[in-house]
Length: 347
Image (cartoon, rainbow, N blue to C red; front, side, top):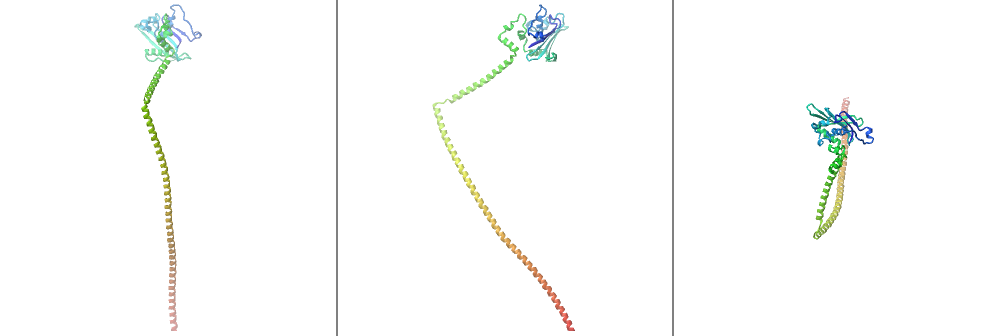
């Protein structure tokens, strides 16, 4: 964390508005400076302003808790009714924020308070947006999360109150570890360490479990002389059985080959029988063809004879008609000759 600007108004002895810009070259040049001045001029008030803005309390107040009704006269400048404390800082993640704490007196002698967080553009220095979330107490928790350490740790390592500079040195080991862990982001290493330890426990348990199983197996594998003889006898018996099984396997392979040979011979025989059947069938069909040819020739001959007979019959019929026609002509001639003979006789 780096504090960039400190500003305020009406905070204790600093009754006017003030601002300190630590980003100026005169502060950044040597990276170290001193706040000097006479007693009562506001040196400690500058540190109080930082604490008020970030944690709403200061080391000068009892128990480091801001009880506003009791401490209001010590916070607001005398004769004033309102005040504010503002700090702009850049956290370990490189993000820049401005936190403003406002307090005011009311008519009934009570006080009002406000707390605002704003995100700041690192280049322009202007406000980007307000990021305050929830109630007043929620915003206080949000500020602590952005800074990375709480107030007790802050006044031990960042701002040491007067006469209490040895507080960090006098802290016990646990307190110093927590403080150093917070300011160095040591929580990450703590989480890594816890994770490694958990994994170690899991792996170690598995190793022990495996070792237990190995012991059990070793105990089971310890054989007496009698057990060893029995085991060897069983091995010999198993070897004999294995040999017989191998012999049976070879016999089966030989039988399989014989069966395959018989199947081939049977197939060959079947092929020969099929060929004989085909030849017989072809012969039978050939004989049928010869018979059919003879019948066909006879039929052709009969058809030829029938055709000749029909032709002769036709010629016979034609001759008969011619003979009949000649007979008619002859009869007509005979008739004419009779008529002529009668005429001749009449002459």
